[in-house]
Length: 513
Image 1 (cartoon, one colour):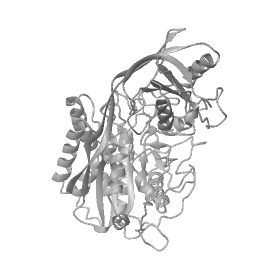
Image 2: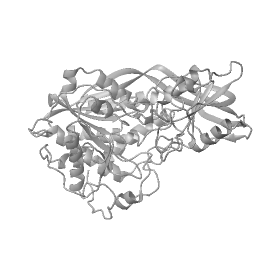
Image 3: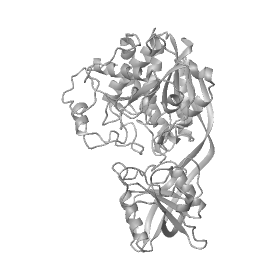
Image 4: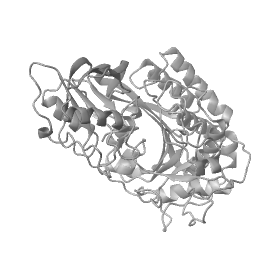
């Protein structure tokens, strides 16, 4: 797509691609002008409008397990088939979950209070009014760094009353939410409240999904902020009997069915496969225009553009549209799990595009070399990062690194040793004043003010972000599809991949602990 070039000033304090020269890429330089001109904002928005219409006709959602997702998959298949790709679907089962009605958490006595709450993914349903019992090892005030072991051992819970309903109060920290809830359920409690731990960044509650339990529970499990949870804990342990009402109305199906949509380029070396992925599902709450209609639409537009200009890739390009990402990266994980070692070894890289149209955006690039965030990607990921950062620098545009933290569909690929990279325009994180000085937008506001909300519709997009990140995505896809050389010092591209167990704090967008 066409863009206006500009020079960014005031970059002090922000990690940007323009700050320092980067090592030369092992990948050879590929002229990507034609593909970037063929990829347009208008084309991207045509797909966004189609996905919005699908959501409008299907209860406002495109979540996996719903008719809106099935219609989205049919749309994607149709676009790719008409463009000449070899299209298939990969069906799998997954545990579906949604709130049928908003959860409620209120203090009945001694002081009637209505709390802001959210249901943990895979919480059970129920309407429970009972006394609050605090788990052992809860720490109020919190430890300086995350480390509360509240509820992590079965002995942290006194046996619940056999005659009167009781609600367990547990603090986040150390072990998974699932372990805490399972221990409380095993001890006989009728509902569980998990409150945030209390350190900076661990104080509030995400009412859409506080976190995921990873398995279906029989009892309600809801979340609470640190301030409200600490006040309850202080009252209960100080000898004040406290009664609360917990209401959750949920729907869960352990064997719901959904699909990945996979499309292979007609040409290209089948022993050197570039997987270009974007998750197709939205959350239940909304249409998902940005998360992830934006990544889906950019990826579709690139696929159509490659067919339009007859790109003739040297490597096989596999466009993948993942199902059930919002349920924990399940589609991408299923895809990787079905491959044997020889098949994994043919995949030389994964590019991931998850949210590239945020209204208050930053040009985030996955930190392949781990120079600015805790973990590097597998060998080859540093070169993919450079591919993006050098592109942005060449356009006079700033960028900055974002971590491989397991919150998107690259996770199963890097766990299998496959080089990965991609772009991200920001989710619920808050834009800093330094970032606002570089990228524009509003300091102190979320990158995406409608993240995981009903308002993530087609109005929740930045065409500037789609323009700039869409061009960068097209540049990277075309470069890796056409390159003659490889990532490494000897010019090789492919590396044999092996599975390894991932160890992330997230499964998709949801914290597990």
